[in-house]
Length: 147
Image (cartoon, rainbow, N blue to C red; front, side, top):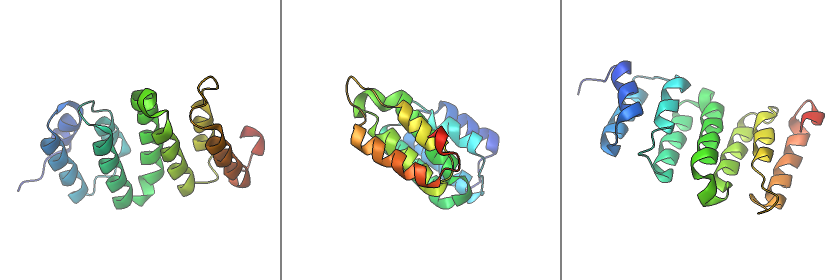
C-alpha cells in the first residue's frame, strides 16, 4: 500500500469522519516516523472521534514517540477539559495531566493546569485527588511558589 503524504494525513486528521480512514492515516504516519505534534493536534481536535478513540490514538502515539509523550498527554488533557469536562467531571483531564507530570515532574504546567480544573461548588475533580497531585508537584518543581 502506498503511504499517504503529510498533506493527505493532515487533511484526513482535520476533516474525516470515518474512523477507519483516520486510523489508516494514523498508522501511515507512524510507519513514516512522523513525530510532529502539530499534525496530531488536528487528530485530537477531530470532533468525530469519541473519548475511547482519542485515548487509543494518544496512548499509541506516546508509546511510539516517547520524546513527544509529554506534549501528547498535555494536549489530550486540554482536549478532554474543553470537550468532555462536563461529562466526566474533569477526571480524564486530571489523569492526563498526571501522565504528563510523570514524564516531566519538574515542569509546573501540568500541576497548574490541573488546579485550574477545580470547581469548588461541585468539588470536581475531587479536592483530595487534586491536592495529592499538587503535593507530588511540590517535591519536583524547582519553583515551589508557582505551585
